[in-house]
Amino acid sequence: MDLAGVSIKLDQSVGTPEPCPNWRQVPGFPVFGCGQPTEEGFTKIAEIIPKGQTIWFNLRREPVAYIAGQPVSPRNPDSLHENIDVASADIQPLEVKFVTEIKSQMKDGNIEVHKDKNHAENPMDRVDETQTIKAEGVKGLNEVLKGLSEAKLPGTTVVGVPFIEQKGVPEEGFDIIVKALSGANAATTQCVFSSQLGQGRSTLGMVAASIIKAKQMITKLNMMVDEGMAQRAWADNIIKSKFEDSIDSEDNKDPFKRGEFDVIKELLESFPESKAGKAFADKMIDICGVPPEGTGMQNLRKAVIEKKYKYDASTEDKQVYWKTMIINFLERYFYIICFATYVREQEPLDFPKTFVSWMDGHSNLREMIEQGKDKLEWTRKVDQSKVDNLKNMINETDYKEKLGGMVSQLYKIAFETYKDIPRGPIKDNLMRKLACKTLMEILPQEVHTRVQQELVEKKLSVDFDTIVGLVVG
Image (cartoon, rainbow, N blue to C red; front, side, top):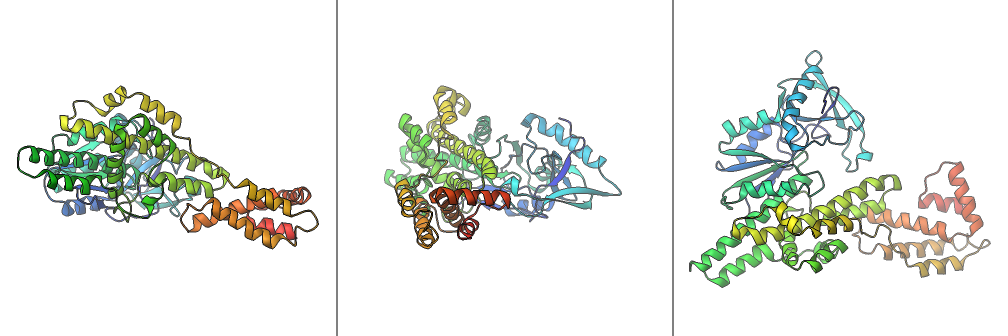
């Protein structure tokens, strides 16, 4: 890949970050996650975690360099809001090229870098800004990590994991983590997972490591019982409470937030072993996730339906991105359940099979998720009988007089349609959007045609207040 002429973008794209952005630890495990640290951040991390065996898992799939202590990455000038995604084997040589390219773009000791004006989850909502910074201390990420392992945190091993952003593939990523942790002391071997923001990819790595470590601890407890060092009831109580029981919260009363999607149900029905795998995976996802269950940045199970809410509330042009993200998130959740099922089976045997070979032996699972990952209710089903009743209540002579009562009924229909969504701006937006769509549907044909024509001629946005104004105008 040729990096000549690439744009240079700050990793923490809205500006100068904290030294250790989004730093957190999984409760009960020596597993940590963070966004890309500044150079100062690596020093702080070395002060935070105890000296000893540490594995630093780098989940970036794009080359990273440092300018004046700040992490930056290359972007295509035509796609400033999207990472350049490369194969893991190419990252290190590209990092060298990237450092060279940065130096070639320097002018009078300064360099232009890009950032986002404000944080926006959907790339289509991001606005680019440029700024000039001092081009001091330019170096590659591997040089910084080498300094960490040699001087600041001796005993640190750096491991690259090639997970694709928002996804659970390639499957080899799970095997890399297994290989690094197999045979290691679950309680003392420290793991740090870093990615650009420390959100999706870091959380995925943290969940995978927690699954492995939890199973290692379960195996050790069972060995203690077998050797007469502990009582069965004592060990079972720890295993159940710490590694198996779901965490009680309001969110976990919602079937979608519990991960009960059609393709997941199909997995559980066709592969019974995955039921225990799902329970195991869900517990680790929760403790690695957001409050109240965890202390992290993202719950990798709830993220599927939470992004679906945003898809529902979004305009059609922006729904394309949300739909891709939702499908990716569901695929990732499916793979996490498969991985947890694999670990439960293979860890007591010291992982004689890789996850890739295990998936080869259950090849129907790949086909299952490929065919089922977009089988979601992309359009909400409205109670059409209630809509028809409203439509029959009005005609071309009295629709204005009845508009007030209709609006109240429209919102009742909208509320019932989205009753599963928590209160807040997303729900409000969804209800207004549905009320607007339904109002257009029930208007007498002549009125509907007039309103539609005015929307086009006056280039008006299609929202509820605008439609009501045109109806009564």
